[in-house]
Image (cartoon, rainbow, N blue to C red; front, side, top):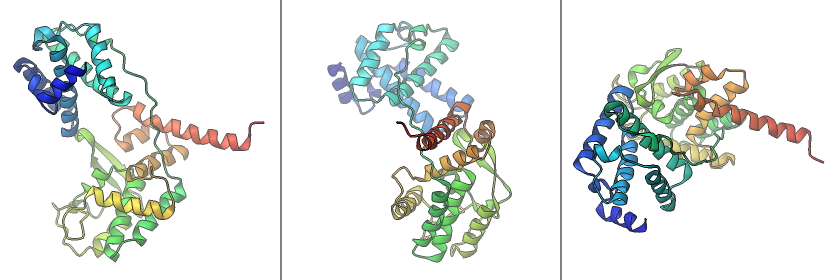
Length: 321
C-alpha cells in the first residue's frame, strides 16, 4: 500500500497520469453527464473528478494494469476493501471517505446503466460511520448583536451600512455568503421576495423582511460607487466586488468583540435563520425550500439542533442527583 501511494505521488498530484485513455474517457463522459443532466456546479464536478481519479489510479496500481471498461466491471469486494483501507491509512477522515465512496458509487451506477457494467461489489461497499457535525447557531440576541457590532467597527459610515446589510441578509433571509454577494445592482430595490440561484443552479424564492430591504436601501444610498444593473450590488472599498473573505473577516472581528465562539461564522448566521424558524414553529419542508436544500435529510439536521437545546434546558431544570 505504501509503495502504491508513493507511486501515485510521483505520477502526479492527483494521480491522473496513471489513468488509461479508456478510464479517462469514461470519467470525462460521466462528469459531462452530471453537468448536463444533474446541473451540478463546477465545484461539485471538480470534487467528483478528484475523487474518481484517486480511486481509479489506486485500482491501476493495486491491480498492476490499466482500467478500461472491461476491467472496471471485474472489480471485486476485496478490491473495495483494499481501497477503503488504503484511504484510511493515508489519513483521509471518515466523512471525506464517505463522500469519496459516494462519488465512486455514482460513477458505477452510471456505468451499470450505460453499459450494463457489474457494479455489485462497489454498490454494496459500506461507508464508514462518522458523527455528523451539527450546525452551531447563534442565540437570537447574539445574532442581533452581531449585526449591530459589524456596523460599529467599520472605518467609514457607508462601509458600516454595507456590512450591516450583508449580515442582515445572511441571518434574515438564510442566504449563503456567495448568494448575498452574487446580488446585482438590478436587484435593488429588493422586492418582498428574492429569486435566488443557489448550488447547482437551482432557483428558490426567499421572502425578504422589511428590515433587510431597509438595510440594503440605506447602504445603496450611501455607497460612493455607482451601482449599475449588471454590477455587483455589494462593493469593496475601492469599488470592486465585495469578497467573501472580507465578510468573513468582519464577522470574525465582531465575534471576538462579542466573545462568541469560533463557530460564529457567516454560515452560522444561515444556520441561525433556519434554527430560529424551527423554534418559532416553522415546518421542515418550508425551511428546506427557503434554504435551497436538495434533500430534506439535510434540513432535518436542524431538528437535532433543536432537540439538543431542549435537552440542555431539561438537564438544567432537572439536575441529576
